[in-house]
Image (cartoon, rainbow, N blue to C red; front, top):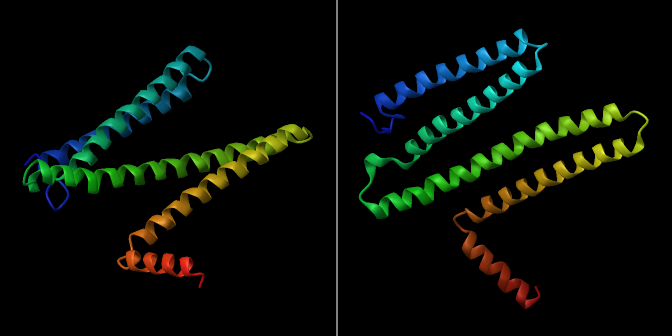
Length: 175
């Protein structure tokens, strides 16, 4: 009842997720209304910014912890060794995947930000170069991340070990 099932979650866990999602959306809407209503009052705008930050923290904690609980799969564990294996195989891989998604999200924001900086620079050559350098740095980071993904994909292939040994032998022979 409390723990996730193969179908996606326990009944209470699913109910809590739905209620939390509704509350999360309502709080974002309320804070957005505060931005519109109090556009002239800097103190209330600052308060609304802080509220949005706290809402993001709360959403990350609630939904992140719920997701991690679902990944571990407490109902199928045969003891500490099985739990440790689940943590290693499921959670760490998903944390890395989540961090890659966040990196791509921030990369998109930084590309737009640097693009706006380039557009606003107009005649200021130094600002324009700074924006171009920012875009190049972001694109280079994205290429590096995808290169690591490609290497990881190759390493996961079933015949990787035999093909890697064969490649090393051929390279050492000078073929």
